[in-house]
Image 1: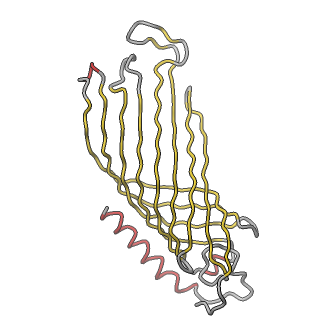
Image 2 (image 1 turned 30 degrees about the horizontal axis):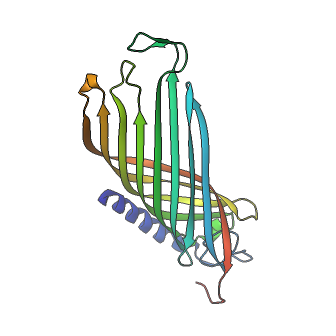
Image 3 (image 1 turned 135 degrees about the vertical axis):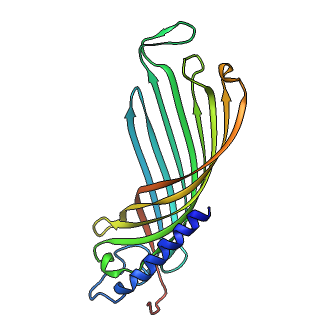
Length: 242
């Protein structure tokens, strides 16, 4: 956790100091072009979604997500996002431990994951970049997830029937929202790092002890995020912005 907070602090400080060169007004700028603009005339609520499907062997996987960010100031937001991931695969031309041959669809495995994210974003006041449709930001996030993997005990090489992994992580990313034309739609891209802990319970098959064994581990990792965004605008009271 401390590693993630330190990473966010470094990214935040670097980006905050770097923005000083870009704070001057740009003549003729439409300050409503990008969301969460400190010079804009609107408050924003941003909705975002992700969907992806891919084939793999005799199976494949899918990931879906939906979330929102609510502006809590001229350049800040708090957000919540839920994600679901599923994966399955099987083998052809394989014989199980009972001597039964499977021409197709043998030794099926699957995995399902649910996760929820809480994030804080700080949007940079880089007006020159915003004239190109970019809204850059730095963000800190926390994640809670549960991954369940299942294997068929009737096939050689499989050690367990079910493994449950409860995950807790925190990290930081840098990214941007790119506005699509003059619409309120945009693409959100970000990349950063995280620190994750795992609380695992494994139901081993009889050949490997037949017990439920708890274990713990942790790791550092890289997070890459992508979503399609749509934001709503709410008029601000007339006041001087800086």
